[in-house]
Length: 115
Image (cartoon, rainbow, N blue to C red; front, side, top):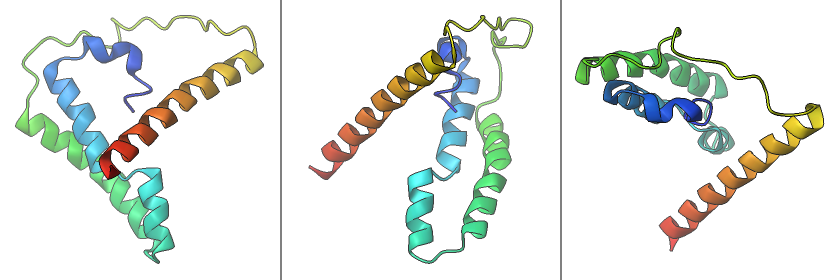
């Protein structure tokens, strides 16, 4: 989710930032999901637990850190810019390069954690 809302992260209030982080921690990552499935855990149970955790995380995030500021990311303030990509191939290339940077960062974090 933070990757999808990256242009708006600087405009989020503290409560909205807390909700994004809580939602990220409450759901299961794809790699962890694959690891648990390889251990024999039922995939339907894992996915349903992850889906049920998302609204619960939002509810608890708003209970623990309620919205006290005026949100700058309301629908009337968000301007959707036209795409900068020239064609489908350009969009795929830019998406792959963004994903590559993300993979390198995750790999560096894992290596630093293990070392």
